Amino acid sequence: MRRSMVAVAFALGATLLGVADAKEVPQSTFVAWCVRVDYENWGNYMKFLETVHKVELEALKKAGHIKGYQFVKTYPKGPDDWNLAIVLEYRNWAGLDTPDEVLDDVEDNASAGIPNVKEMRKAKNAWRRVIGYQIYQSIDYMK
Image 1 (cartoon, rainbow, N blue to C red):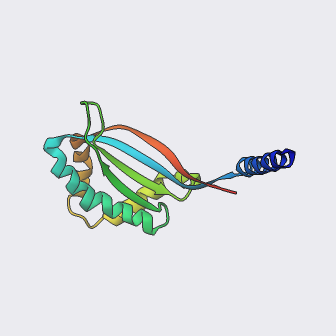
Image 2 (cartoon, rainbow, N blue to C red):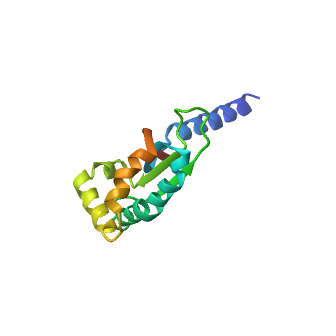
């Protein structure tokens, strides 16, 4: 009986030590911009995202500044809730340190050939309202 209790205690201790030794290995860092798009301007804003913003995001991805992006739609419960999130995926926290001037140059070069791009950029502020943003990170636990 005593041997089995020692064996169980040893197995439990080894298991706990294995869990305590686990390390967080950061994967990707995400920035989610949460916006509220007016329903009467939903089509205009989607056109902006498809014709201008998506081209700029693809250029940032090709240049290695972001890993990816995603648009997430939700159904708000109140007038101050967001209904669209624009999520940018970075390789790590350091990706957030890229100067705005560098990112702006990449975006401007990518969207230079799109007609009415300046007017669409100005109009987007009337079509949507930024509710806020959230930075988060995916984590894998490894031994």
